[in-house]
Structure formats: C-alpha cells, structure tokens
Length: 120
Image 1 (cartoon, rainbow, N blue to C red):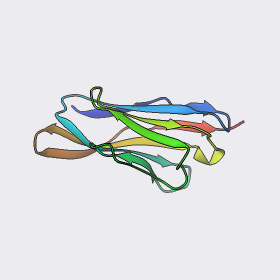
Image 2 (cartoon, rainbow, N blue to C red; image 1 turned 90 degrees about the horizontal axis):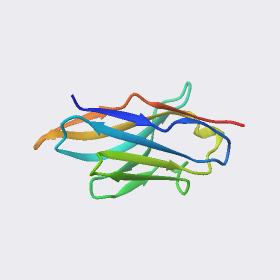
Image 3 (tube, rainbow, N blue to C red; image 1 turned 180 degrees about the horizontal axis):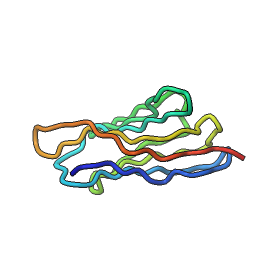
C-alpha cells in the first residue's frame, strides 16, 4: 500500500525555522507533482508550495522568499524548508502527491498532516 508520511512539525518561536519532510512509502514507479498544503483553524486548506518532477516550483504569495520546497526522488521524499516563521504560519501542514505505483497509473494521495505552531 502506497502512503505519504509527514514529519518535522512542532513548536517554534517567531522568526525561527522548521523543515518538514514527506516520504512516500510502498511500491512506487514514479512520483509526479508533490505539494504542501496547510489548514489553519476555521480556515480553508490552502496550497503552500508545489514542485514538479522536472523541478519547477510554485509558492503561495504569503510564503515566497521564506519557504523552499525541494525533493529527493531517490528517497521518494519532498521537503519544505520554512524560515522566518510567523504566527500566521500556524496550521496543520499536509503533503499531497500524484503517485504512480506502476507505469500509466496515477492517483492523488494525502498524508495525515503535521502540526506547525509558531508562538512565543
């Protein structure tokens, strides 16, 4: 069974940094676009960053210049480096990816989420 597992969340002070990881486990042929979303209490889930299999990236305006998304295809892992964190970055962060368990088959998968809290 293919699944996404996030790690790296926690409590950090404003201005601090965290790095989130998301590893796809199971039988995987390839992974297309990988993304990070977040959902704050009483708000809709929003796209934070994405990275294609070719390495093209996109970011929400609110995190540009502070967050960096990257991937290691040898490890089937996507990362989100978060710097200069602000209280408004507090949310549950979810990994999302277009997984190919075999050639020609693609399905979208979500991780379980990891809590990021920015507070003094």
